[in-house]
Structure formats: structure tokens, C-alpha cells
Amino acid sequence: MSISSQPEISVNTNPGRRAVSVRKLLEIEGATVFAALILLVAFSSAFAPGFLSPGNLTNVLVQSVFVVILGIGMTFVLVAGGIDLSVGSTMGLAAALTIYSINHAIPVPLAILIGLASGAAVGLFNSYFIMVLKMADFIVTLGTLSLVRGIVELMTANSRLTTQSEAFGFLTGGTILGVPMAVLLAAAVVVGGGLTLAKTAMGRRTYAVGLNAASSYLAGVRVRRVRVGVYVASGTLAALAGILLGSRLSSAHPALGTGYELTAIAAAAIGGTSLAGGRGSVLGTILGALLLGVLQNSLSLLQVNAFWFQIITGLMIVAAVLLDGAIRRMLRARPSQ
Image 1 (cartoon, one colour):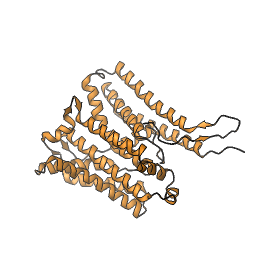
Image 2: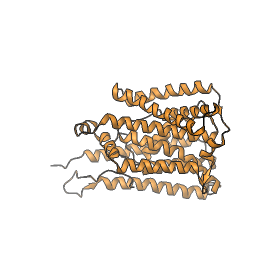
Image 3: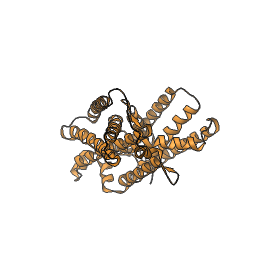
Image 4: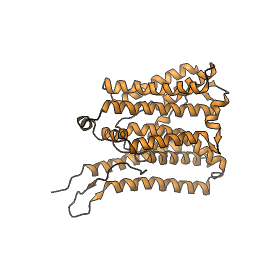
């Protein structure tokens, strides 16, 4: 699976010079993210105490799981030309509902389904206002962020919902053949999301809608169905990430998931997903999520102020947006006469 699933496009703004392959530029972009991850791992191995210990590496993987799952859902939305700021609050809602259900004697599998359904419902709620009432994605999902966070705070009554369920704790605390269960669940999401976006008709339509929704509609693509689908997928995956985070903490608190929406956007943007739509991949988002996970862990081990993580993440997003702008200008360029 390549960093970019886009067809190769060549532009030439000067007939006297060799055409620049945008596909090659995208491959360089993906390779740069991968190289940055390798360099960061090498640096952390040399200077961060205990970075290479099995316990710490497992911790990095499990901590990255939440951003990977969340980022894949965000990638679908961004590729389709939208944005979803409600995913962090959706994480909190799903965790709270799942733990609340478990505490009221509902079997764990059914409680998890209730949590996942809440995420899908948030996605449907967002898509209704965006597609039917024609409201801006940013405004709708920003409102949903506040609305859902208020529901979570009411449910938790400004305290914590806790559970001692071993079955629920197994989601992140258990292992199968030595591999953490959370990592296996994330791997399943990665495979499913990657194949859907890169190899299916739904994936091709998602790219088409992100590139030009009006032209896609004229070509017979059901734009509304595609955009509803990506928002439901984003909400459901956000719910899964929230359930796993609730399992890791054995609790749900009023602020659970706060800030994760920006981390998910950062992972996708750093991995090459265009914030303007039409470009991105699951593999790129995974690399972005791992880069952020290793960075945060390394700063913690080096006892660096946590605010530096926010600063560096912000600079990465700005750099990704600048690069995306350069690529889009190349795509719009025409041969000079």
C-alpha cells in the first residue's frame, strides 16, 4: 500500500524543463515522514533512558493505538473534503456509555456495541446537518464537540465512572500470543480501512468527492451517501478508540478524549492527508500517529516540559499545510504558452 493512492499526474510550467511528477513528490513526502520516524527512534534510543525496554515499547504501541484508530476515521473525512472536530467528545461518550452499561449488568459485548452505536449516531447527527441542512462541516462538528462533551459531563457528574470488569480490561490489558489485544484491534482497523480507501469503489468515490464534489455528482457519484458514510465511519472509529481508552483507564471521566481531535488531524496531516480533500492514505496516517507517539514518549522520558509536544506538533501541522499548498499549486499549474 503506497503513501498516496492517487494516480500519477505530471505538470510542466516551463516547456524547456523536465515535467515534475506530483506522484514522485508525494512519494518523497511519505519517505520523509518515515525517515523522520526512524531518526526519532534512533535519537530516543541513544538519549532517552529506557526507551528500548520492552515495557516502554509496548506502552508506545498501545498509546499510539488510540490515535491510529482515530486518525484513520479522520483520514476518511478529510479525503472526502470534510473535517470532524467532534471525535474527542465522541470518545468520551462511547467510553462513558460502555462503562455505564457494564455497571448496570449489561454483558460486556453488548455494552461495547452500545458504545459503538453511540459513535455511529454522532456521525449520523453530523452528516444530517452537513448534507441535509447544508451547514459547514467545521461549524456543525464544533457544535457537536460541545454538545457531546456536555452529555459526558452530565453522565459522569463531574466525577469518574469506574469498572473492575476483567473482560472489559482485557481489551487493552490482555495479550494474544504475546501481542497486546489493543494492537491487534488496531491492526484489524488498519487493514480494513486501508483496503477500503485504496482498493474499493467506496474509496475511489471518497477521493473523487474530495477533489470535486460537483463534478463527482455529475459523473453519477452519490455524494451524499459517500459523505454520510465517512462521518459514520469517523464516529464509529472514534467510539472504538474511546472504548479502548476507557478500558485502559478502567474508567471514564468528564475530560476523556479532550484534545484527541487535534492529535488525529495532526497525524493525518503529517502523514500526507490534504486538509483540503482529495489526497491521503491510511499508511501515511499510521506513520504520522507513530511519529507523534514516539515524540511524546521521548519527551516524557527526557523529562521535557509537555508543552513542547504541543509546540512541535503545531509546527508539524503548519509544515504539512505548507507542503500541501505547494503540491496543490503544482496540480493547478498549466504549461506556459
